[in-house]
Length: 159
Image (cartoon, rainbow, N blue to C red; front, side, top):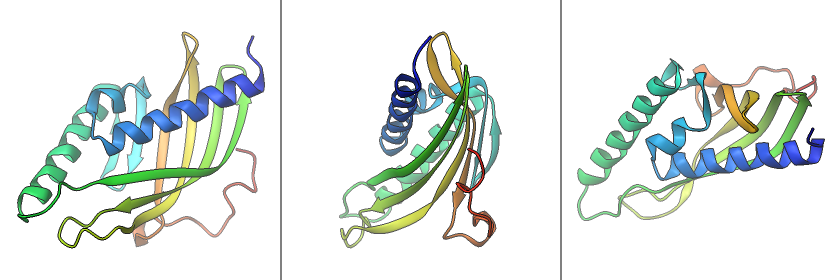
């Protein structure tokens, strides 16, 4: 049996691998952070199942490549996501987490970095074969009206 610290460290590693896969638009690595029956609830909709999540990441990658190609001479779009203030509750092979995120964008036209988005995650995780994976990740894009957080502090209640 692993300790809380070991499990938390593994979950934080999962969060980091998710962010790198997202920013490098790597569909296989992105999908690998979810269980086979995983659910991604994001601004583009609710996506169910690892293979569907993989396809969704392919579509995101194509979108960003088109965006960069349409504005020569520009650099490719570069997004860098950051996660902070993690609250994690672990019960055996199940866990729940909440955390803030923000994104830095390089603005392919002007090349000036800026905060392109921010919000928080609400996650349900499961340990499978010794590895933590997302069962469900709900992304609140708090700069968007239809994805904003509620008035209730998400970390005020048990994760």
